[in-house]
Length: 184
Length: 358
Image (cartoon, rainbow over all chains, first blue to last red):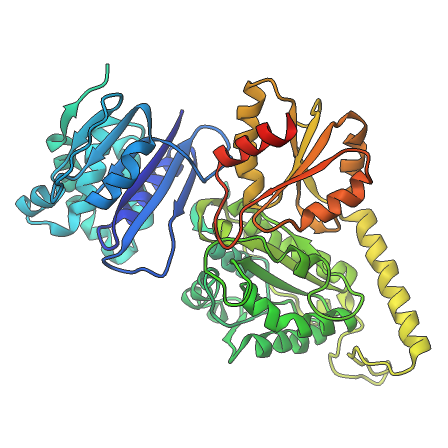
C-alpha cells in the first residue's frame, strides 16, 4: 500500500496538524511515513499545504508531481491542485466560498462542508478533524483506533481531554462527506 | 523495542544531541533550521544530562564558543543555515587548524547572500573545498532521511574525535523541515572528566604536575614547523579518505548510466530512476553519504560499465566537477540542477535523464 496525499488550504485551518495526525496514525500501524510542508514566511491567513505519504515500503521522493488524493480547503488550493490528482484518484474539497467547482471527470470528487458541520456540533476547532473524517470514509487506509493513538501522540498531554471531541468530529466528517462524482 | 516517533529532521538533530551525550550547543536562530535550538530549549537537557544550550549573540560568537568548548575536550556543536555558516567559516578554519573536534550542522538554503529560506545544496563547494582559508578539510555527512539526521549526530562526534577535526552535517531545507519516522536510541551519559582525559589527552583540562601544559592554537609563525603541521593534517585527511567513505547504491549493478546525487536529491532521483527503468533505460544511483571523503573508488569501479554519468544537485553544478575528475574524460558527465531554493521534481529529473542520457 502506498498513498500520496496533499492537503492545501489557508494557514490556521489546521492543514499541517491534520497531516501530522494522519502521519502518526500511519506510524501506529507500522507504515513508513513522510510529512513535507510547504514552508515559507507566511503565517495565519496565507496559503499552507502539506504532502503526506503513507507506504508499506521505504519512501523515495517526498516531492511529488501528482497525488492519489488531493484535499483542498479554499478556492486557490482547488485551482492549483485539481490538475494534480492522478487519473482515477480522489479530490475532496470544502465547498465553502467556492465559485468555480472542480470539473474533472476522470477522478472521484467529494465535498465536505466542514465549517458548517463542526459549527453544528459546537466544536469550531474540530474543522480539520471533520475533513480528516471525510478522507478516512473515502479511503480507510488507517484504522480508527490507530487514528486515536496518532492523536494521542501528536497532541500534548494537556490536550488529551480533547480526544473524544476530535473523535466525534472525525465521525461527523465520515457521516457527512458527499460524493459528487464517482469515477467508474 | 526502541521508540519510533514522528520528527522533523531538525528536531531529530536536537534529540540526537541530547541522547548521545553532547555537552553543549551554541547557536543563533536562522530558517530553515531554527527547530534545532527550539527543540533543545523545550527539552531542557540542562535539567537532565547537564547539557548546556545557549543562544549566542551571533554565529561568530557560536563558532568561537565551540572553539573554547572543544579545546577542553567536550562534545560541542552548533547549527545554522548557509549565511550563518559563511559567518562561521573563519572559526571553522581555526578549529581545523587547531585540530579541534566539533560538530557543525548546516541546513542549507538558497543563496547567494541572504538568498531565500527554501531548500538548496549550493554550499557543496563551501563545505567540501574549504569555506574558510587554508588547506583544510572537514568531514561532511549528507543525510537524506530523518533517521540519518538523528544518527549522524553521534556519528559526526565519533569521527570528529577519532580524527581530531570538525565534522559537518550538510543537510538542506527539505530534510530539515520534513517529518519522518525516527527510531530513538537510549540516553547515553555525557563523558566524565576521567573519560575526557583518556579520550583527549591533548585537551586543556587544567595542567597537573605530571604532564606538560596543553596549548590549543592554530598559530605557528615558523614556516618550517607550520609546513610540518600542514603535512600532518594532509596525512590525516588521506587516512580519512582511506577509512571513512560512506555511500549507498540504488539499481547500479547493471547500470549503463550513473546518477550521483546526495541528500534530498538522491531520494527524488530514485523515483525518476524507477520510471526510467520502466522504459528500459539502465540507470542507477550512487548517493554519497560522506561528501568529504568523496566516494571516488565506488564510482571508479563502475566506470568500465558506464556510458555516461550525471550529477543532480540543487545548485548550478558543484559536485559535478568532482565527478568530471573521476571520469577523467572516459565518459561524458552531465548535470541537471535547480537553483535559488527551487526543488527539482521527479518528473523534471526523468525528463533530464531522457534528454541527456539516452
